[in-house]
Length: 370
Image 1 (tube, one colour):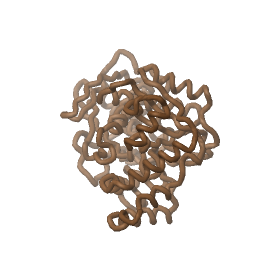
Image 2 (cartoon, rainbow, N blue to C red):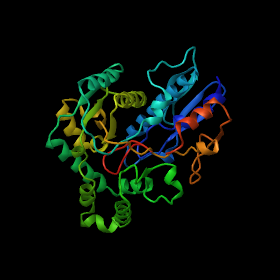
Image 3 (cartoon, rainbow, N blue to C red):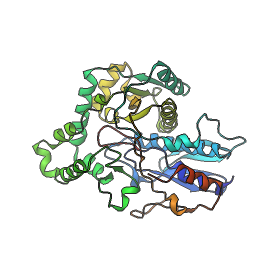
Image 4 (tube, rainbow, N blue to C red):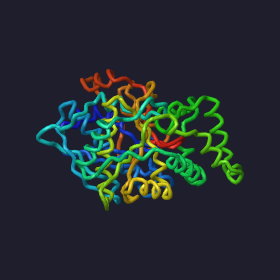
């Protein structure tokens, strides 16, 4: 297995999406395999207590690794081996042939969240295409019925999220509202990716700093209202529905499915804006299940999809391609992986060709996957 070649590609793999852009994945290089695991310091125990978003992110990362490696001619396959105690989900191992996929590295690089305005939603052909992607793994994609009911569910979910002090504290940890901060270009949710003006970013930062005092005075409701109505920005809502009784390893595999769905949407010239709070909040998820006539626990992901009016910003990553080194933000120690020198090679030239700016994909208003 050409570990040096895959190490050189690793920065491109970090373009995978993750909730709040925490980038929880870690790679452990071994003699004949690369183990994919996660760092609990970059998880969301308050906002994602079941670990669903973590496992979807890890699966999306695995799929990204396979796409990037295949595009470079590296022959890898994926062996699932989920072990929560060892904090791993499986291994990338040598294969006889490159991974078969219709996607390539430029599509991985171009993928991002768009919280802006859409001119229209996906047509019947796009819906059929993404549904076919999910059905090949035993799932489905459903169009969420339009109407005021979903808007009410979104507002209720937002109020619930902003009303939980632990979730808000977690959100504050991952917000990047000051461009002067060292971690602004490393991870988290920036004001640019959230579509916030500078006055709005300053106001949000001040409001969250005063959260303990203002919460009893109605701050959660005010914050939910301040986010506006994403449904009014156009597009249609699509829900990814998994098979019944999907276990933790199965959720990782459906993270791979989710990335393929997003890339299929992107190939049609459309963009995605996840609205994860509809799934994160039990009441909203139950009501959504009733609307779709599916068991609520099978709904893994909901996203607004449509044709964007302009390009969205790209979310930050901890890798530093400009220095030729896959470095991690020095604000926290990293347990499973270390920085890797990227030698002057075709892979580094590929990285340079794709650019070195940062930006993402996301949840509803402030919360998000990038």
